[in-house]
Image (cartoon, rainbow, N blue to C red; front, side):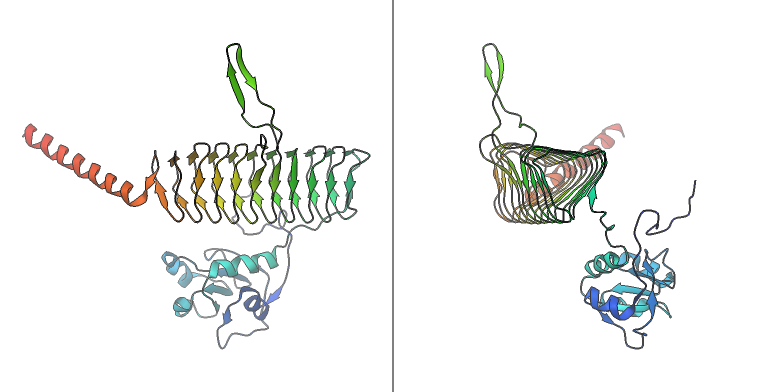
Length: 353
């Protein structure tokens, strides 16, 4: 098996370029260093340690300054204060946020794969489904009655689009996804294995056992949402489950019924949000955090990894721990426990002596 590390293997990533330094500077929003040839062409991107003279790289974290000094990259995006660290022969493009610039030029060198409009012969399409002629429907896809697929949307192999589902334009839906009871906006990315619209976890205890409560809501996914692999989003019970515009859900996230996630939220892997919780705009949630139901998480809150959230969170708050509490209180408790442990160890040592 091939062991040589490379960036942007052409077997998997379409190639763009070559592109001039002038184009890269303009696309990134940076300033090309005086003396650099704006017409110089580069062919790709790579990390500092691997980049060659025909590739661009970036420096975001100051701890990689030594890697910059040793790099053979043809160009590097960096903050202005690091420009003097670049080796001779490496052109610099200075900007306030090199990582944003890097994302922009990497997208130029490696654009999304082009669509292949049409319906694969093995796909099963209901007679009354509406599929835009510019959409790409892959092998073994099933599209149910009354469903609608928008312009320039691609649907991967083995995916099921349920009856009545509407998918907007310019979406990318991976393989083996199932979507039901959902309305999906424009430019939504859904990774393989995602499950959207299954019944929520709703039941009523009775003397004879549990009685399932009909789940009669929908899932509404607004524009520019990105949903990671194997994430599950339950449909609402009576109200809709909503994922707000521009939000990012990592892999293996569980969203319960009636949950409403606001705009531009980030939800990291293995988070579980119980039913009817409201997450306002611009909230960031660390990995493996868990939320009780019927909570409100205020705008701009930050929830630490593995936090256990059992009560409402004010806007802008930073929360840590299980049960979750304000970060400053959690750090005080940690410091106190460490002092107590150190004192106990000191006492045990004195007794042994």
